[in-house]
Image (tube, rainbow, N blue to C red; front, side, top):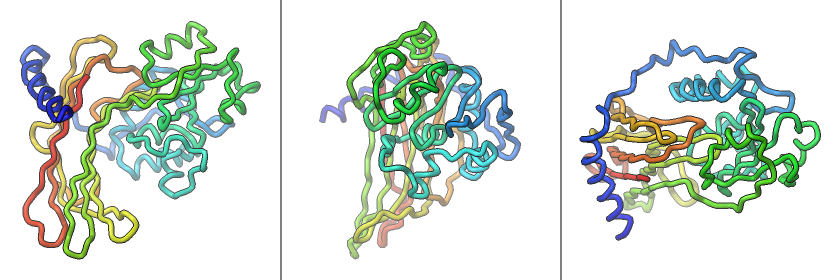
Length: 320
């Protein structure tokens, strides 16, 4: 009941706040066939240790936006061009290591930029992502030769490392630039996720599921807002991805404030109904955390369960 009241309040607050916020606009659409990413050696490359290094924070933020505009095939090609195998690709092929601590990460884009050990480098700073524990480890580039193995093995070295959790209030890049080391925070799970499994069971006891979620992914060095619906079915044991007619409904929208900057707001882009097993919208992806956000997701899908007729609708909202 408390969650329901919060969801209703979120919608009410959003309606009032929109009157004072800047005009909501649709993001500019980009033709996937013409996307050109900054993948030259100066901007991003695979290091000798097998993880990606982005030149600096600014390049990282630009590339996140560009990668967000790519489809699955283009992202696969981007990895191949860099000679890089992401944790996402390893998980997709059931080849991820048993030590993987990003199994339940809700944002595929984050999984696309970290390697098998959860590692990524932005500027002079190496990050080890552990979203399942709400943690992120850091190591300065100058200490890679001495302590990278320790970082991968989760051996904390207080003179060269930090272990931050997702509740970190400060900007991690500012802390690291100032030379901060020795911070060791407890594990936590703070990423805000509102999720609904809308199930329709057929007479043959096969469950047809729409897995709907709104997520604020806080990974310390990476932040995002994601609205997503996946459609699948389950017989006796395993879940199988299934295609259906799917789309976002009118009214799917977001407002957010990055690091106390002015509000920004968007409607979900106008998309035609597609026959697919997944549709998502990621209106925010950046190295900068959000001070506030109000995110409303409205999903529509056609249940493929035998005997089901018409579209089904699911509404979600999260806010801070």
